[in-house]
Amino acid sequence: MQTYISSNYLFEEKEVGQLDSWTPEGIAKHVDIKHFYSIAMTTSLPPWRPIPSRLAARFLGTSLQGLANWRVRDLGPATEPMRRGQGNRIYYRPDKIAEWLSGGKCSDWQFSALWLQQMGMPLNVISEDAVHDRIAQLEGVKNLFPAVNRLWRDFREVEAS
Image (cartoon, rainbow, N blue to C red; front, side):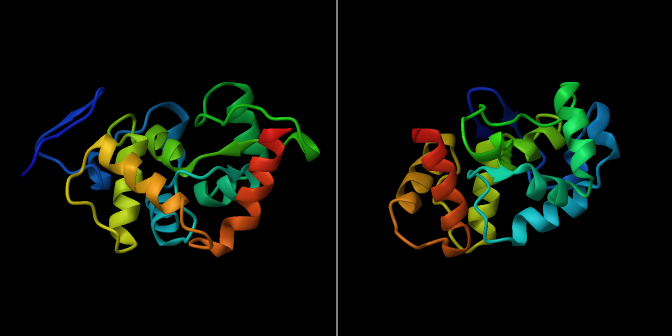
C-alpha cells in the first residue's frame, strides 16, 4: 500500500477512508460517523464548500441547538470565519467536520480526495497539492455543481461585502 504524506500526517497501513481507523475524541464519540460519512459521500455537495449549520446538523444527525452548544463550548467541528450578512449564519465545511470526527486521522484534503474518487473523478497521485489543483480546476467549471451554486453564490456575496 502507498504511503500518503502531507505536512501533518503519515499514513502507512490503513486507508483514511476506513471508518474503523477513525478515532473521534470528546463529544465526537457520540456522533454516528457512518451516518455522516454516507451522507457526505453520496451528496452532490463538494466537501470543500461551506454549508450552513442547519445542513451540518443534518449531516451529523444532531439538533441545531446541539451543534450550537458544541460551537459555543468549543467542542465541535471548526467553523468558517464569521462573515457579515443576512442573519449572520454559521458555516461549516464537511471536510473539516470529517477531520474533527476522525480525530485527525483524515485531513480535510484527504476527505475531499475520497469524495472526488466516489464521484468518479479519481486523482493520478493522491497528495495535498494534487487535490487542491483538482479543486481549483473544478471550481473553474460553471454549473458543475448546480444544486449548490445558489448556496455558494450567496456565501461568496456575503464574504465580499
